[in-house]
Length: 197
Length: 370
Image 1 (cartoon, each protein chain N blue to C red):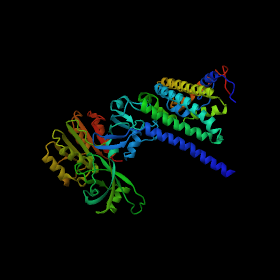
Image 2: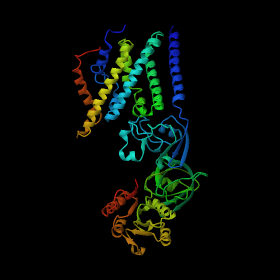
Image 3: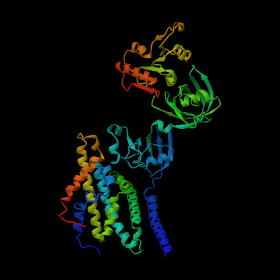
Image 4: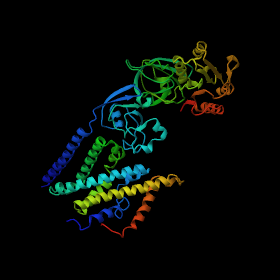
């Protein structure tokens, strides 16, 4: 049974209080490595959002109409991953063919996020929390926007920090982790507004 | 029961992956089919017909042209740079962090991010493009001095080596005596760049040197020798009026090749002064040859420098280390390029003097023994 939560609350909560990066620390790999420049981070954020919406939708259908009826729940991880990988591949090929401009801005990030754990994470949360289709869709969209928000914030701060003189030990990934930690603590402040799990 | 569960797992997984593969293959066929593309490498030096649709990096690797890459195509190492002058499309966001403005002007791209979708024109560093392995036959071996041998090797029939004068090859030894493993060392080519079916090296016996001991004691005429190359960025630039060439010992090798290169290219406008340093009379070699070149070509002058002349040597040339002659005879760095090859000590001393005279890192080229 789907929980009785308004899809809108799920949407807002997944951006602010249950942010994929700042409260679940998922999708860290590309979050850390592609946050050096704001423009690049924006592209990746868009791509993650798009892929999240599409994969949650398709994986919800796969779960309801393939995995559950055939009693393949024990294989769900592997099936979800394969579906995500295939979808991203096809999406990239299609984008490259039909909208080269969009591909140049967005599509090039797709191979980078095939194995982004935020994508699988959202699918698995959706299954664990037994969301219905609309809830899942908004959960995917919200999580994507939240991920985008987080990487853009980190990229903006890192662009400013690039001009600052820092002790050698703190430069690079160490600093990114510290910034992320502070942002995560700040986001805890939102937790009273609404919560999902 | 268990058997049934295993069977079911295998069948379901096979079915799911089969279905997905089918969808991807269809998509690949419909969406990713760019037909055959022509790759033109280094302005017509090599032309390839390849199947479009993959990254430039993997397409080139399929054609046995290996661009260095550490991350395997994820745009995180920034090593796989190649200049694409035509057919690459706009610079992608994934490439931007790795490509400087100056590189953008030179059309440098990350080959792992650029997809082959149409005909392309590429510029690949000759080094990467040109390196090959040769199994040569040692046809001549001659003592040039008491410790320097000249080796002349014949390339296998039909094979040629395309090198720029001044470049080097790697020379591979075979196990000999107590040395149980193969080692390789770099030696500059001393023969003419126009002679593409032979390679000559000058190898000085280094006390306890594995490779040089092999050459001086174990190697015989008729043996098979393995070489790979050419490598290196020590070659003629020639954007000047005069070349100052400096060598000591077997450092003469690349300079000899360079001198012949300038002559064969007909660059009579380019003056050359070759300072050749030796400690004693018996370290000199190729003296008649360079004296002859000096006589035949007015733009070349040969300045052998003898550090410790003995009375019986009857030496009439420059005395002292090369640095002395350099200090006295080279006025300034204006319109001059310097090419140096020799021991680190000698090179450092010479480079210091050259810089005092106004030569810069852009006009000093050297090949240091290591």
